[in-house]
Length: 444
Image 1 (cartoon, one colour):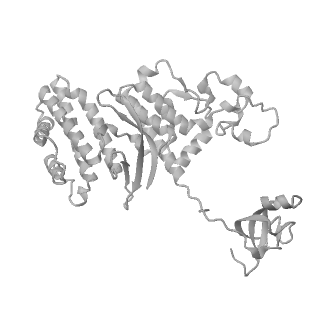
Image 2 (image 1 turned 45 degrees about the horizontal axis):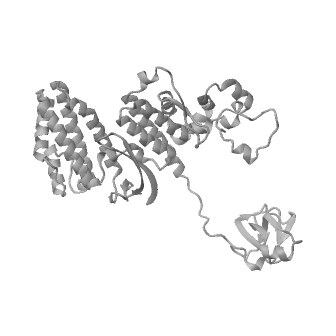
Image 3 (image 1 turned 180 degrees about the vertical axis):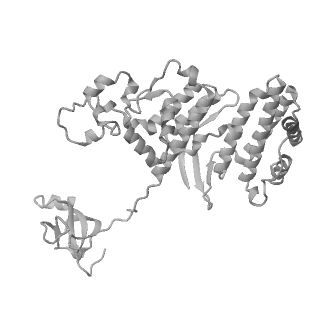
């Protein structure tokens, strides 16, 4: 189990404003490999990944249905009713699976009323279940027999369904349905915070702002490595070695010919031009991470361009004049959010799949090596660079065969201790890397 602090964005249901607070987020896997999510402030032991997915889907359906259910048009109101019932059914399934009722009872063939009954058996009766059952009967008449529902009745059904589902979700998961974000599946990061803010903006119908937040996350995770900003003062006509100050410039994924002052002065006409994608590197990176390049390109085309010189600087933004009117909409924002979460999740999964050997227990060189010779290379014919002696601190790094496979060596470093250096300032200060032969009877 891992615990990490998270910037958690919730949405006030009355004002629609995001509420930000630092809350520890816990992720663990059970024996079946199912991921669970929990929030210690709410006291929930865990929440299954499938539960989060289902509840986010149901929340989206409720959002879609709300305007329909409040319409005075019978056709629109009836369509909203059908969507509300679907959302309720998804919530019932999700909560029963969260409670692991599906492990004892087959839920696939159970009807709406039976699902309500199963939830009651599990100790969580739905409020106003009679009204919800009446809603389901009206949905059957509307969907299968084309009988329109009265708008005033639909509004009542919507209100009851929303309240009953909210109460049940809060009772079982200890979280409101409005507290759920698809970005919660990502590891804690700056990009995750931008994506959660994007969800808040979508909820407030601020689609352009949401798309900008999404692009910021893409910039941080992918595009920043293609920034030539730090090369704007580099003169490629001067011979400069690859020192740390050069490596620290970043932007090494950008085409090599763009990483110099002359090119930048000629081609960078606005801040977002500092991002120079090398198509070969872009494609190879996507293939390595298991991401379709088309999806990455879609995210770049369908969101405003962004740039920042470094994490402490403000963001620069650029988009076509007609972009907000043509692409600043709910459909595009939700598509980009979903794809951004998916691509960043793939990148994080790739990064966390790396495994490294344990190095918790350093090996000290035994005293039996006193007086023995240390060679420059793992070869007895190599130059002798040191003789093992008291007063030195040695660190063994590797056991290896020499250039003669029958000879075995250890790689080690050795430095004169502070105390010995004070007493014998003229002594050999030590060596960074050398090789000591192991005799057949010696072991590390």
